[in-house]
Image 1 (cartoon, helix red, strand yellow):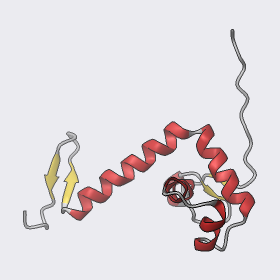
Image 2 (image 1 turned 135 degrees about the vertical axis):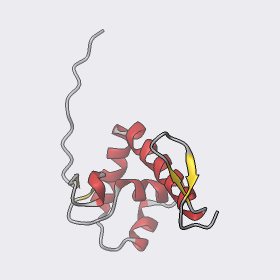
Image 3 (image 1 turned 180 degrees about the vertical axis):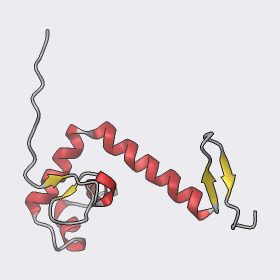
Length: 109
């Protein structure tokens, strides 16, 4: 059975290439949706997330989680990509255009 997908509008979620590289963020902040998701996946409740991010409202946090569930593949891919970048940086490595991992010229490796 064919179903028409409708685009959901999010009141508190936006994107701008000038903010966080175009990642989905809480509108009016620099807080990426993936950060909210990370805290939630660690087991924090919405109330606990708000304690750590007091500039947000409960509605903003709930909508970030709603956005995540509607765009789970995209957010998970972004989280994994960020993890890989952190590992490369920590070990003084870079990803070459060929896709191979190489040491940075200034890393002494």
